[in-house]
Length: 436
Image 1: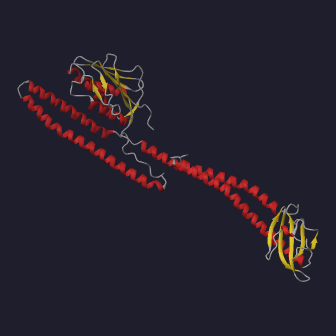
Image 2: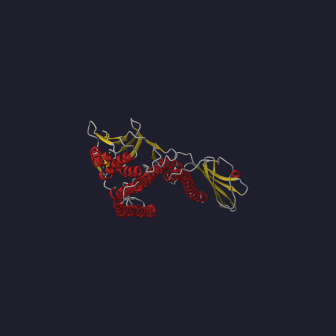
């Protein structure tokens, strides 16, 4: 069994086609019936007048030019022909309806009127008037047929025009919904304030558009409130952690103090990452075309002291040709590159080398010669990453999540792989399409 299309456009167009087909079939039939009935009424009335004239003995045949050959006859109650002109009828009275009431019928190519009359010599009988429909001077049927032929072309063109107009209107209406879908699809981390434009939507869709935009308002408000909460909590935790660090410096050196110090450092690192997360919500609307090589160079210069203190080495490789400018928020991309460098420092042993490079296509790569990065195959959608040295508790998950969030804002992607030395390779693939 055929199914109706799920598309609103398809359903409306299919319904319109069905209506056009029904009208195309029914209207000519109905009009033909009406015209034929009108013609029969006209012919019957004319034959009635001529029958009366014939009965009265008046001259017949000086009517309008569009009359055809006519046969006139009088019959008595026994069916005997009393008079006929210009000649006998081409059929018998018994072939026709002849009763107490007048009758108009068609017999072959003749239109025939039969009616009871009072005979001049007394008694009653019937008068019969027959008209040859094919006679050259009889134009009523020709007019009807000619009109129907021309009307068929007119109604066909009108229905096709109606179908074409309906197609254009439906295409325009469904185009509004496609535009609304494009507006909704453009809403994301880089455009939380985007909404479905209401001015171009039909009034029937406005309740849905209003409800959708109000829902997006609530989601944006909740998202920003969550970001503010994370940032506030992170800032509030910095003071007590700083006090703990000061107290630790006053304690005598011991393994316990070193262990607590490492825990405090890790907590400070997590807080800095939470502050970075809050910065994403604060800065993401300010997209611009930026130089990725300059950002990568700034990130390397900022991280040099930390890298060297940890016993690592770091190098920056510039492309041979100036890289393409890419879409992004400079502050956020700087945070992303810094996080990747910090991730390499924290998850590779002392003495490891870190290389940051910018490519002509605008991508930025951070690679090391440490144990590498493994992708958790059990959760490919979430893209959770972990370092191959799983014995370590300070995983790379939060830092890489921040990087992915930033790339989501900037319209880029995070690519992972292995470096030439077997370590981790993380590449920021950014969008070089110019802003409109």
